[in-house]
Amino acid sequence: MKIKNLFKVLIAITVTVSLFACSGSDDKDPELSLTKDMEVYFDAKGKITSGEVEVKAKHTDWSVEVTEGNEWLSVSKNGNKVSFTAKENNESTERKGKVLVTSTEDSKLNFTINVTQEGKELSFKVNVNDLQFSGDEDNYNKETRSLVITSNFPWEITEMPNWLSTSNKSGNGNATVTFKATSANMSSNDKNGTIKIVSEGESLTVQVVQHAGLAQNCNVRPINMVTIYNGIAFDYECDKAVSYYYRGYMEKAAVGTMTEKEIIKVLENNFDRYTQADNQLAVFDGLDQGETYVVYTVGYNSEGKRGDLAKKEVTVPTLKANEPLAIAGDVQASASYWYWSTQKSATCYSYYMITTEDEDFAYTPDVYQAWLIKDAIRQNLLEEFLNDGDWQRVRTGDLLAIITWGLDKNENFANRIYWCCVKANSSSPQRIKPKNYKKTDRNYPIPNYEKVHIYKR
Image (tube, rainbow, N blue to C red; front, side):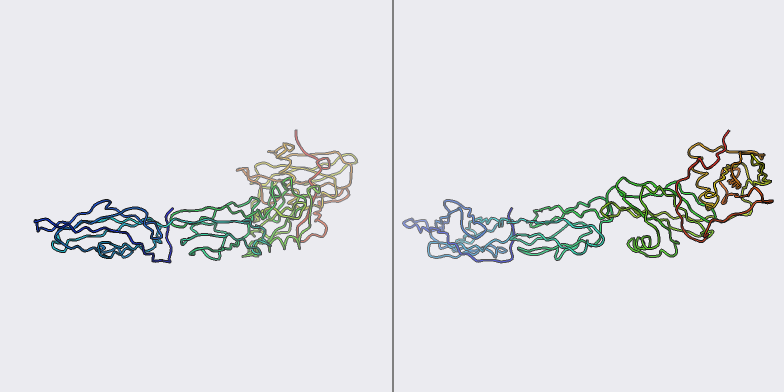
């Protein structure tokens, strides 16, 4: 490659031109001719590489000059010789000039000598020690990497990843260029990119990597989410590398411009830590109607490196005046059985129903019970009922909880369930609130359906 430099060195090279003055002729008309080569060549440094010119003149003297616009080239007449001088060519492309030999007696009698100088060759390379960067949010901005550019021409960095910054994007000659990551790589995959450096039309490309800031196969995703007027419940889908995890929620208005790092700090400081072995169901109860919340989950591997912060916006529905309800009542107990009846509201098209004598389950929040009904439906364990009816079940204890969840004519679930709990010696149903009830989050094991009576014909 032929190339360019800012420094110009003047090297004078003399080319011998022989001049023969012929005599003895009676013809007095001037004659002028060139013999041998009419082309002269120089290398980039100004050294002649080929070409020689002889001038024959008769009945005339002659002059020599460089045509306009070829300032890099100069010539002079020295007796019967001509000296050519060429400056060093600091450009990458060759350049051409013209020298005019003219008869003194007749200016129309002239000859042109073509002069060519080759361009400067490019010396251009890049040495790289290490262009691997951390993607971790705590360390990405604490390290720099560099490469060494060797060039005898100006150079420029024309391409690099948008997550990098550099000390200088262009220069002239040799340089050490440093790079720094401008952002973390908050994904579980490495980022691969290229840095492209151009000098005199030639480009060199080096590879650059920012390692993943998040652990691979370490995500926790909320699934099977159920929402009613005062709560949210869901279970989890965990990747194989998850060693432990946090989950929690915040009001959307409170999140504002919080960073992921700040949100995770809230989860770690305000919510419990769990493992996959806990098999927990998340229950956020006591929430406000019409309020939008953001639910978060984040998993960690055995080295304490986290996966993605999963987030999902959930708006808690507002109770309507005409919710489709299946109302359980008229509960009676004999020594062997429980008896009760159900009656649909005007807007209730169908409903699902479960009962339990398990006191621990009776104390659970409504949204947990709603989640259980949805889960039983997913597993095809629960039948949809269309009509009012009278019911009975075997009695083994002194407490019975009846939970129904109604649907409207469009198969939409009500924004609340109907829940009643009675004791065998009580004259009327009693609402039993969960222990220590407050606006909070809770964890319950995935339900044991042996403790819940599933109605299915």
